[in-house]
Length: 635
Image 1 (cartoon, rainbow, N blue to C red):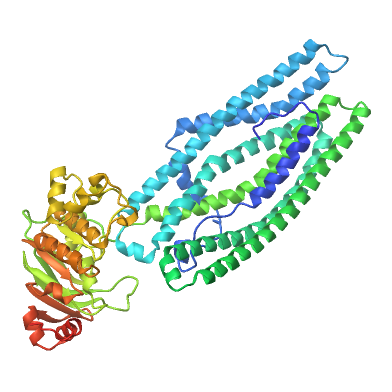
Image 2 (image 1 turned 135 degrees about the horizontal axis):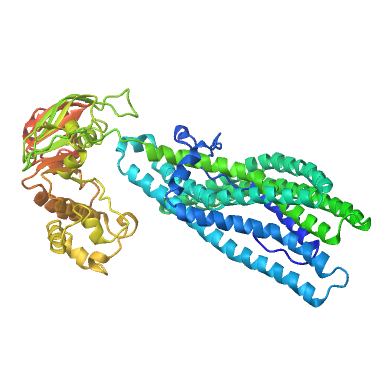
């Protein structure tokens, strides 16, 4: 409680008591914003896990904070100073009353003791500023370090991790959980230490002043703690429900606004408004319950605290009248009693806050210590230099970790020669995308071997493997950045001339030159300021900058209009030249010129050959082609 008391005798402690009671009620009303745990990922995203059962996970926070011993020392010294200064105020008030006003004190006597009080207030003000700055600095610094370390570890984890763990839930941990930790480090720990010092020091001073009255006050403290605990539990439960309601309203808004074209196309504006209104009313009903419980809790706590202080003042006044203690002593006792009561009231909620912080630390620790299943071998085998671009699949069987009962590839064999263009076609779920995932070693097969230029992928460094591969996805995935950064994502050290050369080869130079700030133009979230064809051409330019010997194309023209498709296909032809290329093809017209077409069905090669050969066999490929070409000449 780092604020100066006024010289208004007992009005000060009454205000402090009311503040302590209200703070206790507000503390119990804290919404526990810790997201769901990984093992509970099937729950709704706005559900809330219980607190940690112990404070052991806080060791992670301690280790992060221990990197800044100088700041911790200054903060602790400032904390000691402010606690001592706060407890010195009642002693100063006692001197003012007993020595300044007693026996017709002169203005000089009164002024001397008030200057003493002003000195305490000055120390308190400076100490509070230092404590606040350094405690807040430590909190923000620890959160920044934890976020950075967790993010760095997340960048090393394979895509399989994000199949089993929702990216939205991980994002929630990186935001709300770190916010809880920042509160714990920057506020809760400081509050705990400060109020512990105040409670211990204040109680010792009270026993020094008046042992009998202090015993009476100590007996009253449990009467304040019990309702805080009982009501606090109910309040937190209702608060969690209220938070879920608010989260549901937010999710509904996001869902509807992101699909506004569909809503308006089907004239569902009124229905969505009614649905939103019902959700808002449910949120309000829950909030009313929370407010009612909090009001009752605040009333009872204030009654107990105020009643206790009034009874102590009554007892003290009688003692003063009987000459047992001085007027200054009762003033100091009541002021200190208010500080001690507030300290104990705050401490009742601190442990709950620490448990919530421990829960957040535990969940972040899971991300920080998650280990990639795909990691470089201890002594990785070097890939041949210069690269050739050959790929080999031998007896490969693979099952996704999330679908172990289904084999995406079964005893798969394929040899791809350097410079060859191989198209992969087949029905949905045949295993086409799985090949790309395995080639880039996002997963390892459960059986069989995949080789790049004769080296088994499991014996090579994944970074070396991926450095020899360029990938163009079906949707030109771009980042919320400017055009230059999106282009040089393929090779970050590319020069300006190399960037423009790649843009021209990808038929992207013209529209890039027409952008308001050229390459420095911000492209919007996920490149939304560009058309689909422009996004694809930027993705192709990015792959061109990569200049890798192996190219993976995930049907880069399937969602484009005829004009965009022509421009993109022309860019792809230049990109594929003299490179080993694997093409996932949904539109068979785009792979007629492939050197070889592999037809997958059920994770196995059903057919392979050229377009003409496969079409003449009247097998699966021919059936797929007849459906797409609708009876037109396909040979």
